[in-house]
Image 1 (cartoon, each protein chain N blue to C red):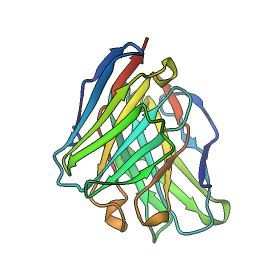
Image 2: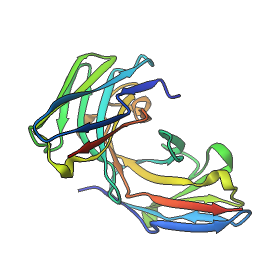
Image 3: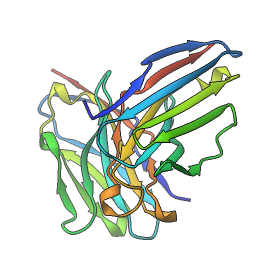
Length: 115
Length: 116
């Protein structure tokens, strides 16, 4: 069965620090990969996605992620975080198995950025 | 605002009550989903509807009963729930249920359910 693993459950950073959140998935076929973010009290929203092509994808708010197929990884990065980046981040994978859309989510990483 | 609304935003119910959660999408999508979000656990996909037809039921107990009367509306009917069913229930929609354009899902704000 497919699964998604996020290595850090809680991350605490100071403003301007660099961020990298790990995400690994288990599925041997073609996958589509996503990072979603949930700000406090708000709905889940898409941060960035990878379907094909350049494995380095750029998303909103200065975030980027790199798909490394050989490592089954899709880590999220940001060179300099801001207090407003405090949120919970979810990695998700979709394989299209079964012919319909099915997202498998990781457990999430809660990021706290201190001023 | 994602174009997906959910009501109510908060619900407290006893184990013998019957209640329903409502989801509405204004995006012209034809696939809708129910997820359960519990603390410290990954989002769990509960049900998938494509063109108003249920295409996945992820071993969800029968005390949860979904209904999709049309492509814009999705309900989750609840009865005789257990305290462990307390969670945030999220609705999502996507353009289709298969194909590249279908993969992006748009989420509603969720209903925070507490079962007492």
